[in-house]
Amino acid sequence: MLSGSFTIERKISVNLSSPLQKGLLMASTLTALTAPTNFIGNFFEWFGDLGIFFWRVARAAVTPPFEFGELFVQLDEIGSKSLPLVALAGAATGVVLSMEARYSLTRFGAKSLLPAAIVFSVIHETGPIITGLVVSGRVGAGIGAQLASMKVTEQIDAIEASAVNPYRLLAATRIVACILMLPLLTVAGDACGLLMGWVAQALVEPLSLHQFINSGFKGADFNDLLPPTFKTAVFGLIIGLIACFQGMRTEGGAAGVGRAATSSVVLSSLFVILADVVLVKFILIFFP
Amino acid sequence: MNTADQIALHPPHTANDAHAPVISVEDLHKSFGSQKVLNGLSLDVRRGETLAILGRSGTGKSVSLRIIIGLEKPDSGLVRIHGQEITGLSLDQLGEIRKKMGFLFQHAALYDSLTVEQNVAFPLLHHKPEMSGNERSERARQLLTEVGLDGQYDKMPSDISGGMQKRAGLARALALEPDILLLDEPTAGLDPISSGEINELVLKLQQEHHMASIVVTHDLHSAKTISNRLALLDKGNVVIEGSFEELQRSDIEFVKEFLKYS
Image (cartoon, rainbow over all chains, first blue to last red; front, side):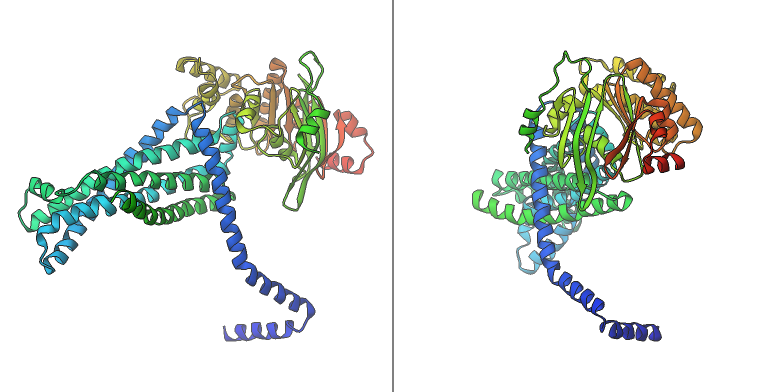
């Protein structure tokens, strides 16, 4: 190993004296210097391509023929089949919230606020964001991998060659299904979170569900429930759009399919979190 | 010159022009990055005629086929289908043209989540809303029987051989009764017997349906069997076009070399 390192160092020091190696060194330095520029260029190129893709899908989605059959398949695939995972994640979150909030509120002498703390935490933030992230993991990866696989095996080209618009059949149906199902899944996730939050509390200190709900929702109105629930429709748009985009632009065989699945999950999760920041601010301003 | 100027210079053929080419390609150029794939390709195919495009790998054979059906946009040049210029059309406008075209992909490109029958019924489901489910199924089974896949209706594409997948792909390409058939390497990767069967099948279908066809292939035997004319491509352009005998008589070095090694 040591002799290997020594040899490399010697080669570098010797080769640098040649004009060719100096040129190569200069080229690699230039590459290193221009790398951030390339990254920024690629970033804007990606956004530009995403914008064009969105425009094509939006236009295809609102013009006939409508692909209702495929839409119902996707509603089932994205909605019904995500329900157990969302319910489980929501339930776990409710239990954790209950335990953590109990500990904190007891320390500050505000234990009576525990039901309200759980209810507001779940419906305002943890329910929607956990649902968004769970769906981006399950559905984002699924859509990304499926469409990428179809792309590299020319199945999307075959759809187009059969005079069917793939933006309408594949992308629009999946994106619309994500938009429609996310709020419903959020309601389910919220319900499981609240139920298990109550169970966790009731196990420590007897409290009926009726008392928990009454106490928790005291002072709450529709502005506390509807805007945070419906903001997940935006999460659905983000998840569906990014997963379809990453899938349908895939190149490069099995490796490309893997990259598409990974990037679909990573990017959709990231943009869901970033969108949440903006949407929370928006909700606080317009639905105080 | 923009597309509008080109269209003005080359008005569409009229319906009365019986001998007008069904497929007309003029001065097609296409590059991928710095690699020039097509360099002024021009071709005409008439009804009932089959043109085989031959050439070495990477000379633009498959790309030319993909441009003709609109899956790739050319850098410049014209593609006319039944006299209508298609390179500037939107996806939905292209859809109307594509209903008259059948395309067999090199690897068949069957939808892997659908059965063989559902694959063949797919174009019918989307373009023949007047057909009932039973009628679609009956038509798909009829087409599958025609290509020799009787009884394979409920199998998934992954459960049938490469040759059978090509046959199913061919049945799907014929579902909308096209008057143009484009075949990308129909015998690639098949054993000699399956290749022969596919060749006979294509020949039979062309004789029955009188389509204008383009076959892209490396297989000279297949090209001789199923085509009326052959076009040999090199560096993105046609080196020679004619019958097999005309190719054999050619003095062009590339043509001699190609025939020698085929």
